[in-house]
Image (cartoon, rainbow, N blue to C red):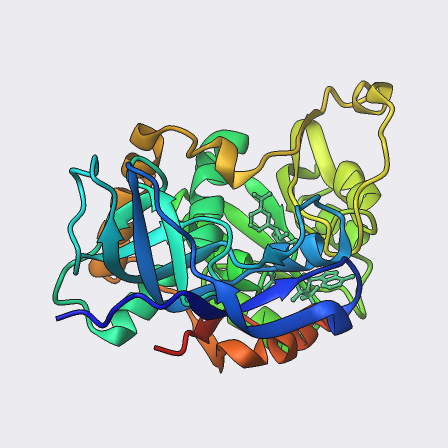
Amino acid sequence: KMAPIPAVQKVVLIRETGGLDVLRYEQDFPVPKIGNNEILIKNKYAGINYIESYFRKGIYPSEKPYVLGREAAGVVVAKGEAVTKFDVNDKVAYLSSHTFAQYTKIAETGTVSKVPQDSTDEQLKLYAGSLVQALTSLTFVREAYPVKKGDYILLYAAAGGAGLAFNQFLKKAGAHTIAVASTDEKLQLAKEYGAEFLINSSTDDVLARVLEITNGQGVEAAFDSVGKDTFETSLNALKRKGTLVSFGNASGPVPPVTITRLTPKNIKLSRPSLFGYIATHEEWESYTSELFDLLHSKAFKILISKTYPLKDYNRAAEEMESRRTVGKLMLEIPQ
Ligand code: NDP
């Protein structure tokens, strides 16, 4: 028997853009009302992603007040009249905005999947943390630049949440991954997850090392989520006909680029978003079922390095943005 659904809930939100000080933990935010084809999910865990900082800083636009969060897992507690695919009590994992909350609604045809009904809390946590970062790496190595066996690939932020996932999928594809991170500890972790060559960005010249590793040729592709500070290096590190996949703004957004910059080496430049690769329900189903199979068979691992209570999200954000974290960070939602 389910507890009744309350009118208000605990959430982490912003009412204005800015620094860490604009993050608020509020206890009386309205619980969303569901429409005919929506379900209401009581969240158990939500995954933390670097993207929250872009909404908070205003790099990405949002309507205020804006409840943060992009992924979670929990239990369906209500469904609209037209919903056929889900029932109350189903355990689910899903991608949606506004998951740093006790309750989130989503359309039944959206990016939401049932997970095994006997999932333990630890398994639910893993599902909740497996969506944004792992699906980003999986879709990007297939579609943003289809990685081939023998490719040399430059990977930034290689020990972060997305980074550890990229290392594994690149290795599976048979690539030689050149991992960049800011400490030797982070690089060792990247190696454990599949990296072959290691570059410490605090002490090494990244471009010089890449050229040394590739006998002066450069890499077939660079996966660069650092953005502004590394764009030039990534471009210069590419081989003729190489691909730059620029997909984040950790150091700030990349300024406008003159397209003739791509001409000397016939470069391809891609600036993808995960959501553009899982926009249809078929794409979502296909990629999540592949990912969940890999997780179940332990052929793919997620390192959950830290779990914070929802009210302490500001501490998690501070640690993540000051580059002190590795792997996946999670929030436990109060029940
Ligand atoms: P991470 O756990 O990777 O944390 C960010 C990492 O970026 C840091 O640990 C740090 O690693 C590195 N970094 C480099 N320069 C800076 C800087 N100036 N300030 C802060 N950090 C810096 O986060 P996520 O795994 O959540 O995301 C990784 C990146 O991928 C983010 O940029 C994110 O926006 C992007 N992303 C994009 C998606 C898309 O659809 N386009 C989807 C998912 C993620 P180090 O200290 O080793 O350099």
